[in-house]
Image (tube, rainbow, N blue to C red; front, side, top):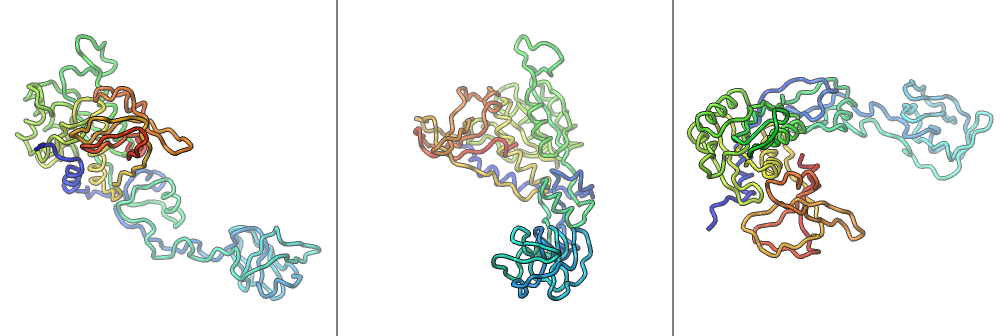
Amino acid sequence: MSTLLPIEQALVRMLAAAKPIGDSVDTPLIDAIGRVLSQDVLSAIDVPPADNSAMDGYALRSAEVANALPVSQRIPAGAVSAPLAKGTAARIFTGAPIPEGADTVVMQEVCSVQTGVVTISGAVSAGDNIRRCGQDIHAGETVLPAGRLLRPQDLGLLASVGLATVPVYRPLRIAVVSTGDELLEPGSGRAVGGRIYNSNRYTLAGLLHNLGMQLIDGGIVADDPDATAQALLDAASGADCVISTGGVSVGEEDHVKAQVELHGRLDLWKLAIKPGKPLAFGAIGDTPFIGLPGNPTSVFVTFCLLARPFLSRMQGLDELGLPALTARAGFNIDKPGKRQDYLRVTLSSTVDGLVANTYANQSSGVLSSVSRSNALAIIPVGATVAEGDTVDVLLLDLLT
């Protein structure tokens, strides 16, 4: 029987261990995009604060619509209206308050005005074209709950109830440690003699930036047990979570796993996923630790599928689901796999719906497979796929 842990079980265990940070700060609303609310936000007012017109037209009593009605007042948005005299209509504009006594707004397109008198053509019902007080939000109502990731439309909603600041969790501080004698930072020299540029640091920097989290650069660490231990301990001392790349497999130069076990604990290791089998999760002291594989595509995929929801839960975010679409396979999988495979695919829209075509090279070392694809196609353990079959896909833009 395989000892590899299914990804679903790994994610459940990781999320159970994710403890949201308790630090909350009041942040100007204009700067709160991408932050997570730390408290429920209640409205102190009704929105709209009074009945108002949904369009330009005439406010009147519906019972008097059959009559020719003199126009008794003009009400622009932002004005204060007088009570509507009986047997009259008020010229009114979108957003303007409904005058006392009126129960209907008639759109100007069905109104005819001559010498200050309006006549109406067509049927009119009481309540037409009136936006009622509190129609959007009632005073005392929860506008947005704690744990909500603030989107642009959320900022507008909070502004609509008059808030200038909001309580949000501070950004997580994530230390990233890159391991490997072969790694070279871009700009520090030519990659020759087996050296490669450290792409993982920049992939993770971008992913963490998009999550609104702060990167603490732990630098490149040599393949040495003492150097690895010191780097991990230093990183854990100032971070909310430590992420390493490389050093978690079973090679003689892979020291991360052993040092985590020595200076903390390892809660899980080796998952039934492809790419990314040698993922490790645990803690260094009291600081959570995620050990990602070294191959660049494995780093990207395992971060998106496992590290991202874990960190988001630590950040206080409640909405962690990975929205999946379905597409028709433009490829064949003849041999069932022993690990759940996440193929890098490009989705194309056709008259018959979405079609997923695989990137030519699915090696875990080929970073272009995620850069030049727009989705991951999920191939379950033991499954085969024939061209035209339905497969679940995850959009990369929603994972990053």
